[in-house]
Length: 114
Image (tube, rainbow, N blue to C red; front, side, top):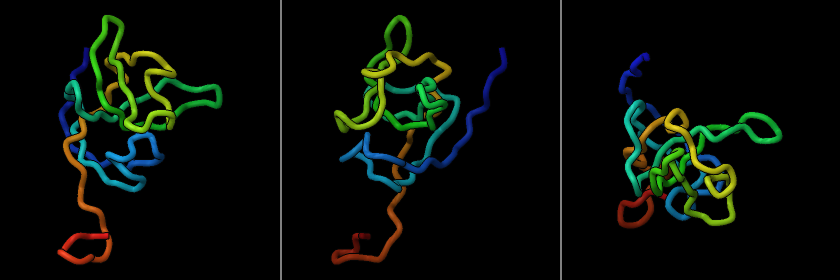
């Protein structure tokens, strides 16, 4: 068994499945090769669909079951999650999301970025 090395990476949110928590284009700092945390966000590899491989996705980790991890999007009815594909194996849990990076854009009133 090979051990994967912990490393940091960036992920960009695509789609609406994590709204309102995450929006299209949000950038995330992720840590590879660490177990997910219940209630936290994870970068996951969903099983291939009828149209072929699915891209990596960000999902909320709900629980660990005997046959894998149960993950869901925050936006019910948008995207694919365990309600569609069932639990994910350990190998499907790619990285733990550490934080969302600030959005790029011009400054709005109060120093917030738009």
